[in-house]
Image (tube, rainbow, N blue to C red; front, side):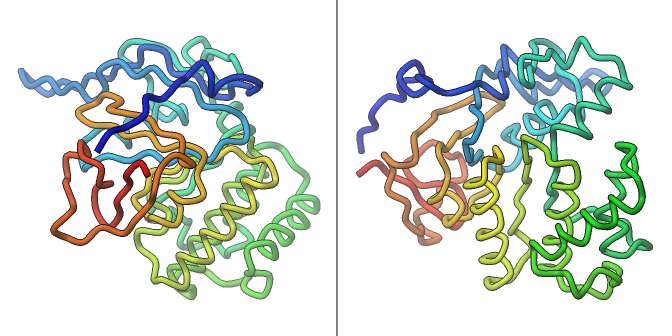
Amino acid sequence: MTESPFNAAEYAVGKHILVRAQGVKKTYQRGAEITHALKGIDLELFRGEYICVMGPSGSGKSTFFNMVGGLDSPTAGRVFIDEVDMAQLNAQELAFLRCRKIGYVFQSYNLNSVMTALENVTLPMTFAGMHADEARERGMKLLGMVGLGDRWNHRPKQMSGGQQQRTAIARALANAPSLLLCDEPTANLDFASGKEVHRILRELNEAGTTIICATHDHEMLAVSSRMVWISGGEIERIAVTRDVQIVKASLGDVDDSGATANVPQQTGASHA
């Protein structure tokens, strides 16, 4: 198989940079043991894109997400959101940026177990200073958007996994973020629930929300703008999705290194 090289300059024409990672490195040290989780990531992500990030376990995907989302700080390098250098922000400014500009959807939902769906969704609005009545109105609208308007008073234990994940998506949209970070959002869901999450994310992207998703879900890959492979803490390759043929891979085709044409786990991608 041969791959056409990704032409970053050509792809960037007419696009507005939303996220810029510049020489991002992350090192962890425990005693004498040093782990280089990221080894110098350079990547520009554009407003309105739907990016799928792939790589085997331990490749650095989650660490990269933490850097982009402002949940952790690089050991070296910088991350810019709308040209704001997150390293230059104090704790209060960083919290404000995360609250206003970034939404998070986690594989394990991360809902507050003692709160109702509506309370979970409105919590970020409360942090942002929104009036209670306005927050409730917006929260109900968001729950309706994800098909849970009649479940607003249910707590997580009273909801299925798919319903919890849709609640998590509504919560991530609480303050109308420009960037949505999704970490394996369909990994714990059944087929029907996963399809519903696909639909919601696709419609959000079509409405202008920028999405970065760590996934090996072939349906998400198929609707993405670009695919980014990370391996060993480095970007291995980038592909424009329209230039890639997405196929389901059999177990015998899966290469956990992510270095072949096959996308690790459950899916494959090869250039037509």
